[in-house]
Each structure stands twice: as structure tokens, then as C-alpha cells.
Image: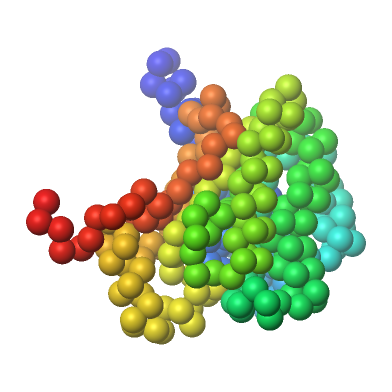
Length: 268
């Protein structure tokens, strides 16, 4: 009897989830992680071809995943997405993972108004608005969990552009305040701040050996992270086992944010 109770703490059987940007990178890994633990998942992506290819793979693997084409930077499309999710899951949602993100790397003085609007709408506005739309569904489920995919760039100075850093910093702060506001509705909000993770978003940077070496030299674990190492943390936040954790920003970064000065050639 006790063993059965313990198993439920580490299972997502019977739960529903929405993961934005699930056709590749961390989003793709997260869909597989949640579905593998028993959740029924709906995801979205801008590229219909990539989304359909992903859905075919998940179906072949036996995962229960549906999807829809959506550009979360567009308000009307966000609203349409949540109507679809509500219909699919009968007005209840257990898990919402806000994963979509983008970056434009420029000196601050060269950013345009269009750059600002695009990055903020994609990274922060979509996250904020989708939370508003998801709230009644999460509340109705009786046990809601929101997970934001932020970045270490929202916590420390990183070469990622000030717009990207500002948008991720806003997500980190939203986590703390929203966790307090929505606790009464039994909705938990947590954030994962990844470091340098091997995803399509950084594929160009990965081609620059000098940059990769410099980053790894400042990372205690001395390597680039994998998407599956982020998705496993997402899953943990969503499990019943994490039911007393809310308002936290956890770095999945190989230790780079705690390395004040610990060089690779240290004698210790």
C-alpha cells in the first residue's frame, strides 16, 4: 500500500499539460519527459512541418500528444490556443510550461523599436498573457503547476543581449510574485534558468570554438548542457513529489552562476 502511494508521487498519470514551442530543443525534450511520465500533452509551434514531424514521432512512441500551429508572440493566436486547450482538456489543465524564447544579439544602442517589441512579445508578454488565460483552467484542476523556461542571463551578466536578459529577468521576478498571488488557488509557479544548452537557438554560437571553450572554462562541470537535462527538472517541478515547492528559480547551468573565481587550472 505504501509503495503504491510513493509511486503516485513520481507519476503524472491522469494529468494534462500545455508546453509551448514543443517541436524542438528544450520544448521537445519537455514534451517527451512529461508524456513519458504519463501526462497527456498539447504543444504548439510556429512551423507546421516541424510540428507534424514531431507529432508523428511521438505517436509512434506511444505518447499521448496533440499539437497546433501558434505564434505565441501574437495575442490573438495565444487566445485561440487556450480555447483549443480548454476544449481538448474539458476546461482543466494541470501543467503549463512556458518555453518559447528568442534572442537578437546586438549592442544596446543598435536595438530598434521593432527588435524590442519582438523579443519582449515572444519571451515575456506571451508568458504573462498565457498565464492569465491558463489561470481558470489551472485553478479548475485543483493542482496547477506553471514552469517558466528563463535563462541565467536573467540573473547575471551574460553575452546574450540586453533585451533577452531583461525579458528573462522579468520572468524570474514574475515567478516570485505570482507564486504568492496564486497560492490560494493551489497553483505553483517555478522557473528554470538554463545555462548554455545544446539547442537550435544557440546552434550558431556552438560553431564558434573559442566561444564554447570560453564558456566551458567558466562552467564548473566544464561542458555544454543537453535539453534533456533541463526537461528532467521541468518534470520534477510538475510532479506531486514537488507539491511544497513554489516561487523558485533554479539554475540548470553546470554551476556557472556560482563560479565567482575558480579557474580551470586551479590546484585544488
